[in-house]
Amino acid sequence: MSQRSPLSIHLRRTVAGAVFLAAACLPLAAIAADIRIGGTGNALGTMRLLGDAFTQSHPDTKAIIMGSIGTSGAIKAVPKGAIELGLSSRVLSDDEAKSGLSIVEYAQSPTVLAVHKNIKVRSITLSQLSDIYSGKLSHWPDGTRIRPVMRQPGDDNTRQLKGLSAEIERALTVAEGQPGALFAVTDQDAADKIEIVPGSLGVTTVALIRSESRSLHALAIGGVEPTPENARSGRYPLTKHFYFVLPKEPSAAVLEFVKFVTSPAGRKILEQAGHTVH
Figure 1: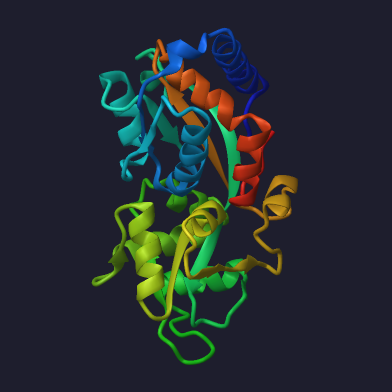
Figure 2 (figure 1 turned 180 degrees about the horizontal axis):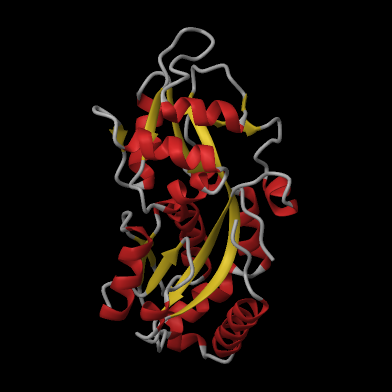
């Protein structure tokens, strides 16, 4: 996994501090407005929970959670004004930052290999995972055919898997070119297919499973359970980072929502939905 530089951490903390300070200084009358929020599908279920709680405590402001448009979609939509607040699973590229956008990391959650609810396997090794994607391992112990649910090669979930080992990276390249491979376009589409297709295996997050009450179970990797605590300590190898994408001049309502997410009430919702927060 890539390490964040001290400079990037400092910049995010500086942006976050400015956002929270600005929100704290705003009069209540200034924050009445609807907020359209969209982006990576892994964040949407939790955002709906946060949005509902925010609206209850801010009745003049409604948080509207859009359908999945992905991280890149959010980064394109925010500067155009199509949404007021974006949700990203990666940092901005240099070109994206030139548009005046800024990001604030608000939480993390384990990225997991999830299986259909009828599969009794509870843990998988990196070697077994490589064999599944290369086609060497084609059936679960009970004889059910293994059906990998694939994502696009550039997707963050795929990128994380490829980072586990060179063997898995090569195996995924093989799997991506297999005729009849089962592909999912969005995070919700992937979760749907894992729930519906017998024997399926795919990548999602603890946050999505918990916040959307999905009938899936996440596999341990090498016997290490994919808990938020294990991901935060580094024992579990896969972590999804979640960022707010803010326009150059965020509205008062957006600033107040970001402030709410970092409040004790917001942190509690995040933690219950399978996140860790700084």
